[in-house]
Length: 205
Image (cartoon, rainbow, N blue to C red; front, side, top):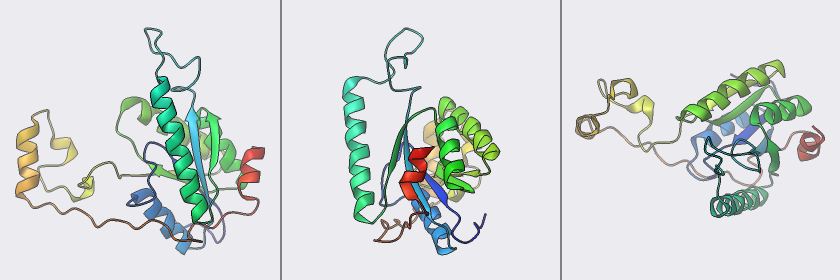
């Protein structure tokens, strides 16, 4: 979709916290070229973090070492964004509620994030898409989790053709000389212009 001039888009960081070689950021750059502003957001999902984030056996879904590593990665992302003039909004809660509330607060018409492959993450996407729709925003999922983009896979070797026998499937891809897309550069200074009110408006949500 093509956003109207200066209407914000939410850049929702999920599992991929890279600024360099990010298909999600490349999609956001297209929106900026069309006149959109950008608000980067990361949400610590309480499904995975916090005292109630337990699996069916009562074990914490996220151990302290993993939590520490992720907190450091988010801080590194925040500093990287700061270096190009953008401010990362960090929140804690369920994404379907938090992202929708922030979208409504800043008047966003689109939320852009990397699409995931696992069941629970896909369910989060569905709930977030529905909540954002009610808030007046569309959720755009961008694929970027594999070296070969799923849209570049040769005939007969697509995701639907994979049936558990990995080697024959891999050989089809290797034999087709399936291309690896060129690396996307990291955003430059000013490449992620902030919406009016910026992070303050999001925090107010």
